[in-house]
Image 1 (tube, rainbow, N blue to C red):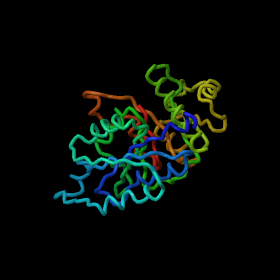
Image 2 (cartoon, rainbow, N blue to C red):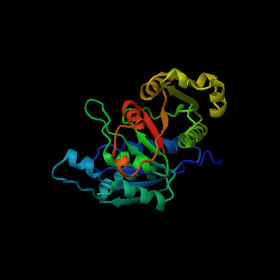
Image 3 (cartoon, rainbow, N blue to C red):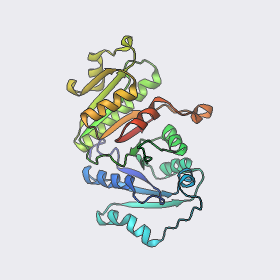
Image 4 (cartoon, one colour):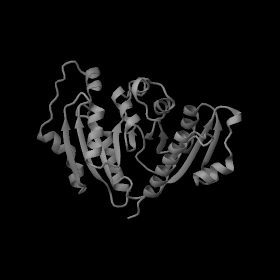
Length: 272
């Protein structure tokens, strides 16, 4: 099997026992179905305290053998190799990072839960994970299609900042890997906010190795442009990047990546 098709062979699926539907696990099962050679799944079972505090005051939950048997039933049915561990932790995102390292994980898959008015309601712990995860994090939107026909990579090719250049390369590499693994189309979107920042289109085509008809360059706010292009082409996954932040900057909210995630109503893969 090629390196591209092995890129997501070992995935960690975040399971929240407080949720009735495990969207992340459903998406991992779909990955196993679509990808040549399938995937191995590690179940990270843990209550996320931020979510738990918001939804219930008494924290009265229990999970018995029957619950676990029902959870892994589709894994057993499809002969998927899996492991599982259970955590009770207030340090949720660091526990996931430790598990990623212990189990040599290629990708984390977790659910994005929406409020009644369809706003993103991801917790501070989830944002923290996105900023420091050493591997891609796939955020599964509950209403997204599970098909994998179009991959949209969001890049900023008009910058010469070394950190963004490296991030662009990672985004394009992952998008290409997924396009190969799923037999999907790769699209690229590049937004620019000022007319003086218009990217060199010929260079963009060459550097992204993307067909002209699959390259989308538009002026406007990145979150708005990326969302519109994703809707127009009916992208199944949008690949974006975020720069790792630590200290006081890590506690701040509202960067462009977070704005994009809030607007999109489809699966998002985040790299940093």
